Image 1: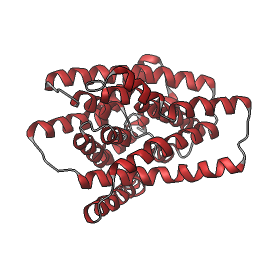
Image 2 (image 1 turned 90 degrees about the horizontal axis):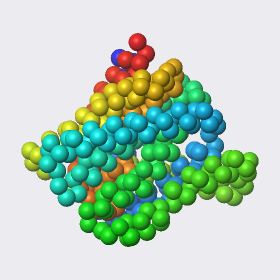
Image 3 (image 1 turned 60 degrees about the vertical axis):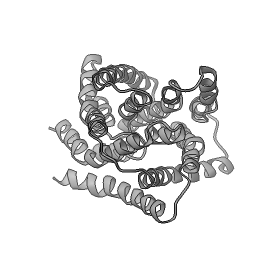
Length: 308
C-alpha cells in the first residue's frame, strides 16, 4: 500500500497537475499545438537523449544485454499488435496509431523516476533505463515517422523527414564524445541542462493542450481500440518482457529493471507524432491519458510482484 501511494503522490499526480494546467490554458486561451509539438520534437527530445547518454556510465556487456532484450521484446509486441489490428479491421492511419501507442513507452518522464523509486537509484538499473530511453527515443524519430506517413506520403519525402530529425544524430554524437573522452565546455553543457530540465514540463503541457483541444467522443469502436491499446501497453508489456528475459536467460536486477521499464504507460512521443503528422491525434491522446491514469495500479502491481 505504501508503494502504491508513493507512486501516486510522487509520479502520477505531479504528471496530471502539469497536464491539467495545459488543459485549462487551452480551454481558456487557446494555444498552437503544432508549435509546442515542434519544440518537443526538434529541440527538447534530442537534448534529453544526448545529455543522458553522455553523462551515464554504461558498460558494453550491459548495452548488449539490453539491446538483445529490446529487439526480441519489440518484435513480440509488433506481432501482437498486428494480430489485434487484423481482428479489429483497422484502416487508414489507425494501424500505425495503434502500433505506436503500444510500442512506444514513456521511458523518460515516467520510466526514469519509477526506476529510481523501485531500485533506490541503483546505477546498474539506471543504466538499463537510460539504454531503453535511448532506444525508445530513436524509434519514434525513425520507424514512428515512417509508420504514420506510410499510408499517405511518398517514400522519398518520408526518408527526408526522418533524416531531418536531430535525435538520430544526437545518439551517435553522445557515444562518440564519451568514447573520445571529450569534456563539454560549460558554455554548451549549461544550455543542454536547461533544455533537459524543460523537457518533462513542456511534454506534459503539450499533452494537456492536446487533450483540451480534442473532441471527447467515445464511439463504441473507438473506445474499444483505446481500451485494447491500454491493456496491451500496461498488461501485455510487462508480461511479454518477463517472457523475453526468461527466453534470453537474463536474471537479477537487470531482468527486473527491464520488466519495470516495459510496464510504463504509452509515450508522449506517440501523441506528439500523431499531432505533428495529423495521424489520429484524438486516439493517441486518449491512449496516453488513460494508460497514464491506470498505470498507477498496473505499475504498482508489477513492482510488487517483482519484490515477492
